[in-house]
Image 1 (cartoon, rainbow, N blue to C red):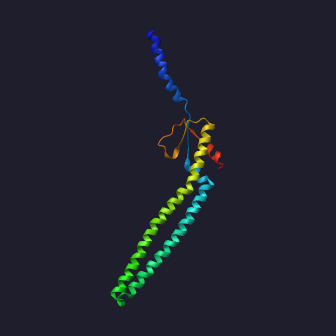
Image 2 (tube, rainbow, N blue to C red):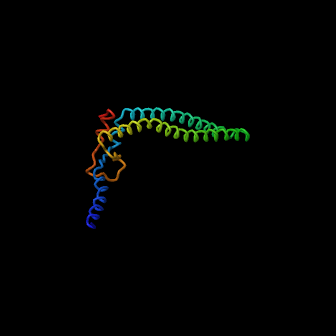
Image 3 (spheres, rainbow, N blue to C red):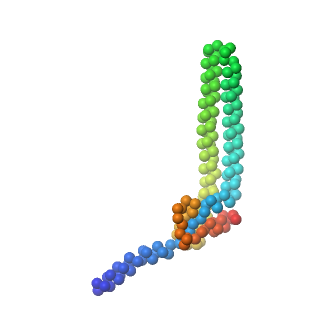
Length: 167
């Protein structure tokens, strides 16, 4: 009877090990999928247009600052102290507003990128869920952020691309 308990105990200990061996783990390469998506190209185009508009505004502000500084430098010898002080305040105001706009422009670009990338991410997530369910994968990991991927893991990148309708 003692031997039977040991066999049953040993069998119970093996069940979890055998269960782990049946997991199907796949990976995909987001660096191969995302750039191939038309939505990604559209996102990059939108970001470039936004950046160009923001850069143009920044250049306009920089030109205004340069003109004010140049005019002040040329005229400061002939200006009385109160006008000099007013012009210096105006130059400082333009400089500060330019710096504020630079920070705001960076935030605008970051926010736009997040907004435009959210639907791309959702589309990939949906495709991964569908590919995982269809192929009984326990996990699909992103190969681009993994330190090691077992040779036994399946590359699901072609399946994800097909699901997304990209080549």
